[in-house]
Length: 548
Ligand code: UDP
Image (cartoon, rainbow, N blue to C red; front, side, top):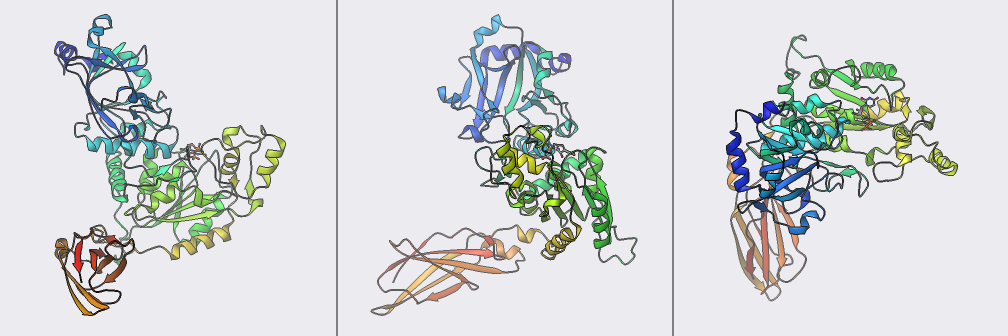
């Protein structure tokens, strides 16, 4: 393997000389360790010490140069999970002169992305924490192309989903453990360290109970482009959309429902009955898929044409990112688990432009749950707890809010098996389907925001000693003439100078004369902006100063 890396494409002596002369070069983006990604020339890794090494020379560059703050707490997060203290990255420093006393370095010619996978055993974590962030980190830096090398430093073995990681580039990803095969000292000619967190939408509850991230920066559009890229790599093409206008029944693509089944834990105990009920209710074929029985790509092939996906809460539901627009995600929750508090898949389905309709169902009938108190704690067993605590958990009907990851009551409840009560399930489903929006074909109209209104102006007049008028007018935003917008409105804010509050108005036209609450000999600050279709807000134009 070391052959593969070290030969041909780089001249060894040129590389070594360059390292000796220039040392390591580092330039990073980001103000904080939590939003930092660093690019290096000649970052090295010493496999004996299991440390990255920065070689100082007169010509080396280290930006930011944080001094000791580099350890408070770290230079950057190596995984996409924010500020997790097991996922920090740092390097050791050495003078280039030390190279004389060290093993000969092996140079890695590929442009390399160095990162930690967060939990490669769990499909949700694989997609949310690793694949999406790595895919978009690679989009951010154009030299991280299809030829890029990925290096996973978390120290785990390949794990069950390694084939998915292989889709990110044409080169085999390297694991930490494999680095030592290349020699005691490896130097990455060009590398990037860290992952973009821009695409993540969920926090797992390390510092506050789990939930959607406070400031989500990704839309369904990016998720779907990522999904499409993976499908292309897997050689999967989406079936044609069902064509309602097709006259011949054969021309219509048959619609079907997918039940994603788990076969070891958190079972649906009456899956056959559930499938029958779905088939009857929707007059559709129902197919089951499971990670235990088939390849992930064959599951994606089925999902990408589905009308509806039904599954127990669990990591397999991340696969809903492959569902077609307009389809339905039905998530089942065991007894005493509140769907509102565990929303990674709801949040995904609800991202703007994801166009999935999400329906949660919860088992409210205690007799229909099967608990496993005697299993090991990580599968929800509670027999290791004190009797009183076991008793409290057994009588509780709702898991209280909690932090990740070892709360025994949460694990006990989430690993229950469930007999799905069919009438309640169908009720919830039919109620939920009533709220399903009709998918619009022309999408762009709902994505484009208004520009600023142009040429805002005000005119004032004083009527009497306590009456005045304020007329405001403006021109349409420049981009409006290129768009078909269902509804165009304008919002005007009027604030008396020096006051904290303002009066907001929504107007359909491009001018208006205000007389209520307008006082003579007073200065008003006036802001105007355009709104498309009720919720697409444009920027405010420069504030107007209007003196009556
Ligand atoms: N898993 C599965 N079938 C099962 C149980 C688990 O395919 O019966 C998968 C699951 O989708 C996830 C991984 O195994 O990718 C770990 O499951 P776990 O229950 O630990 O996590 P969760 O699904 O609650 O996130």
